[in-house]
Image 1 (tube, helix red, strand yellow):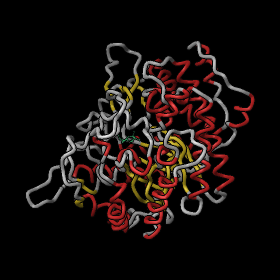
Image 2 (cartoon, rainbow, N blue to C red):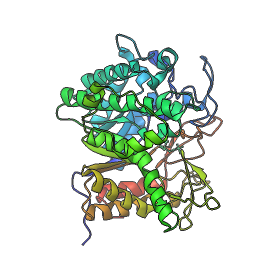
Image 3 (spheres, rainbow, N blue to C red):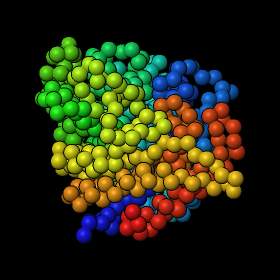
Image 4 (spheres, rainbow, N blue to C red):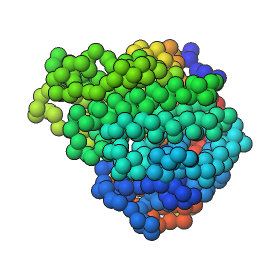
Length: 463
Ligand code: BG6
């Protein structure tokens, strides 16, 4: 008989502060990199003024409506909710000597509300945003000063929430800095590799120091990293394609290697040499890096292919990666290729490599929903996507992979990260808002709401 999900498997969903909260200037919040990108990660960057109306400024107004939303998550049976703390609510400019009490108080209220329903928080310290103040003053992660600011922020929230939050993540999709340097490390998009890898180095040191601080301040807590897990396959069995695929997968596995082993993998020596990159890595950095994470978390939406054949090398931008499409897979309307088996494959690859527990902290289908005349939303495509992926998670568990839990992306509709759209929806809960920001923000249960409720209730037996 196929292995079941473990009894203590955590079921839930994942959101990020800047994609749900809104209230972008409320209670002393400072401007973050996300506020500067009203059109999303790949849109134009603008300095904002009070009164501007970017769609993220209200988002789904989770800042004020969280009690209603958490009640709905509880109705589905969630045992975990992944969210992030907006760094700029705690340190609005990033380098203040004292934290902003109103920001801390908001997260106290949020975590207390979750506790009412026995929903555990899984908290990301930095999800695609950092204080803009740190960029203006120091040049973002290009500067070592940012390491100290981040560690102070991390220590502040560990201290404050140590009795309420036991599961933490450092940086969301830390490998995305290679594709979107402004969002990832606060550098101009056109920065060269030397600058980007130096900033990444600073961020890796900061991540390790946060692991250390978490272990000291929250001794019974667990802290993980977070990778954008976009596995690449060779397009053909040509050995050159296979080798190139190994190299390109190392682009992102490198982050996991440092965060789990505590040092740079040897293949990076050659990479840096061949790319003319010389990093400033101090002896103290090498000591600081030796703080392996307790578990590995990752997002999974799709896979892609790699080829060395120039004619076949027709890339498509999916999410933040340019990948060659796989001829065996169908795509979502946004060109993301749907590959449930790839999730089992990725879980096995990561477990073989790291031998650490894994947490799937994002997975889902961005799709357009139709509200029927009777108000119902019949999102069978979303149910099929999630069902197929969860079946593969169960297969991986049967393969012997230790999986802590599953938080699908956007259990309630939210603003998309790449293009700040509303029409691309992930939720079990529909939010009445469109790309122009019109709508009542009313919440409605979709068909998938009841499907997920059943999955959790039966502990995956209904899949
Ligand atoms: C992940 C991010 O890359 O993908 C999320 O961590 C994001 O923040 C999600 O929302 C889906 O991407 P998008 O562009 O459809 O919102």
